[in-house]
Structure formats: structure tokens, C-alpha cells
Length: 420
Image 1 (cartoon, rainbow, N blue to C red):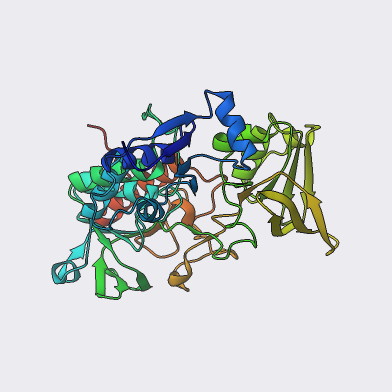
Image 2: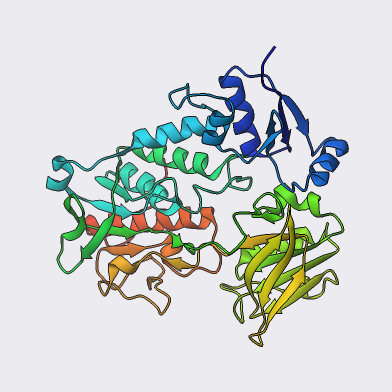
């Protein structure tokens, strides 16, 4: 008999629950699974323990929230060189490590037809089209696993992909497809660029990369600092996913904090479960073209513009939140849960400086073909202003940019579509 009593509280469709279970199996450990989505008694047990999210794993009575491999190994007395977890997601992560290579002298000597700065959905899709169109293609990304799509825990609406999968798995599939067509991927940070000549120069720490055309496909930067109390109460009243955790707040009062389309969608979902949803918009208006009419007409939703979340408080779980009102007054509100959607605020285009035209928030200004003010330079995805941020829209931008680049490099009079 195992010397460890392991109980895993899970929920249906939870990718991190699968990671926990697969890890325990790989380590040869038996566990009892309690699915809180199927069995109400397990759901109630979590609520009694002031736990409002899954996975929640108890190892001899000690709680681990989420999938924290180092903490698991410490509680299970496993060494760091034990066989690593290999879920489908981890296999894709390993593939990502194989896809991205360090920069070498040969890359610095080459003149590429097409270089994309950013390996997310826009950059990866562009690489698929460019490489398949016989352009010598290079993708540069400083942190391939840290983009908005890569850290998304579930994708269920990407066209042509019927199964649910993580953002990292979807992204790595796209990158692997581009690599199959001949695209190269390197991990490095772009320091500066020079688009003044026919051959564009991209300066990285290792040297200078040269290209006939460039696609700016960088993502958006999330705030670097967490809200006071956010980390402490994650899984105990702080959440980032209504699909995963909304049911824990049936007939309770929650806050949704954000100024983007995702915040609206999550508030709509939570209003189906909660007694009251307080939507805090840090600014006067939302970013992008969003429709607030459904929320404004929902009696369960209260909308507070120019209200900022300052702190989250409680003992074992979230109980209160400190809010700075539109009158600059600090108030303490009773609350049962907080859903945060404050990421992805500004495009990471600072390295461009004055080489292309950007708007007041840093978005690159482009035309219908995604051409920038610099000839042979294109921009898309989160680097340009779009009415809404979605992986499929970024991927479409990548296709347009690659076809536009192919027209530029081969000096064609018009775009040439790819068929078979």
C-alpha cells in the first residue's frame, strides 16, 4: 500500500486536472479522483474547505492548488531528476523546444526573404504561408511559451479543430506545420530594427539578422504587477476562468475586473450563476468595439466605470475587496469571488521606435494588406489595432501578411493566393 493518501478534486474539461492525474500515474502513485462537476457532494466538499477551483490535490492532508510540479515532488519526496510528466500538452511543449533553436553564424550570414518577429498565431500562420510559398522564412520569438495564446488553458472554437486543447498545443501545431514547410524558428530578443534600406536589419543580442521583408507579429504586454492579495487567494476566491469556476459561486456575489471583450463575456457567463456580478471597468470605456447592452439590461449585473481594484482581502478565502471609486474614494466591498481580466493591455512594439508609424498606444498603423509606412514591412495580430482579439483573427493576419510579403519580394503586381 502507498504511504501517500492522495485525493484529486477535478472538473470535466479541466486541462490542469489532466496534468495532475497524468503526473501521478507517471510517478507510479495511486490516487482517488473526485470529480466536482459530476458529483455534487465533492463540489460541496470543496466549498466547505473554502476552495473555489480545480484541480485541488490533497497529499496526506496537505493541499496543492493547480498543477505545481515542484510542490508535488517536495510533498512526495521525489527528486528533480525523476521522470518528467508527459501529458499530451507536455509532449507539445517538448516539440516546441525542438522547434526553436539558438541563433548561429549561418543564420546571421543568411539574407531571408521573410522574417517574422513573434511566433504566436499571427507569426506562426505567416510562417506557414510564407514557407509554403517558397520564401526563405525565419521566425524570432523571445519567449515562445509565454504569449497570450500559449498560456490560454482551453481552446474550443478554433475552426477545424473539433477537440478541446490548450493554447500551447494549438500554437505548437501551427509552428510545427510551418517548420515542416521549411521555416526556421529561433529564440532571441529583438533589440532594434533598421528598415531604411531594401535589406532590412533586425538587431538581436547575437548579431544582426537580414531580411527582404519583415512581419511585426509581437503580442500584447500584460501588467507586470499583481494586485495585492491576488496570488494569496488564487483558487480561494480569485479566478481567471468562468468556465472552470462559475459553478462555485452559485447565488453569490462576485466581481469581474477588466476593460476588454473577455471581461464582458465572462460577466455574462457568471450572471447565469451568481446573485450579483459587479463589473469594474478601470477606465471610462472598454477597449475595442464591445456591446454592453446585454449586461446593462441584466438585473444581476452592476456596472462601475472608472473603478479600480486596489486589494483583495480575506482569511481562508476572499471576503472583501478594496475599491478606488470614480470619486477617488477608497471603499471596502463584501465579495465572494473576484475574476480578473486585466492582461494584454499594450502591444510590445517599443523596439520599433520611429521606424514605422504607430498610434498613441503603440499599435502599428497598417493598410488592408497589412503594409506599414516602411516598404516591405508588415504588421498584424496584437501588434495592430483590431476590433477584437482572437487567435483565428491573428492567424488570418498572418496569412495576409505572408501573401503581401510574397508579392513584395517577387515584385508581383498583385497578391497571388495559395490553393493546392
